[in-house]
Image (cartoon, rainbow, N blue to C red; front, top):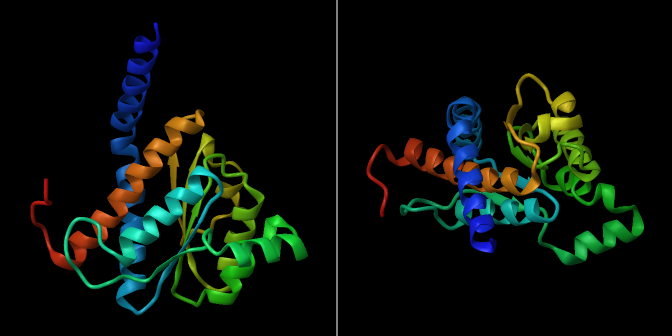
Length: 199
């Protein structure tokens, strides 16, 4: 019984990824172009999320600053989820909902990109970060699910919305990780040219 349940997780995850491939490829490609324009102009990507989405933000930043699969110059990215002193000071003094928006206002510049990750699209701290990014004339790349929630309404025409067509948080997060890899690979491909990636 347990083994069948485990197998069903694999099947459901694979099915969603297969179903999402066509619908998400266009917004992912648009996000790649936005990030490419940003980093080739000397800008940076600020990434934020809560819980599992915080892990995705950190994963993205690590592969931008380090590398994905091929050697290339370092790319500017900061995960706004990692400085415990900033997070606890801001949360204590102002409230948790502004832990990311204050960092965006402090670090964000026109032309930078905010990678805003929320499976529901309703996380107050992420919505506040989106508003702060707009104040700084930044482009927002939003990773959501469940129809996009309030985030879908907060985005501008110049932003990019990558919304996983599913209601279950675990499945959405699994696709979000794949999207992060697609973003990194897409930027690398544009910078370095087409070639077979390492196995």
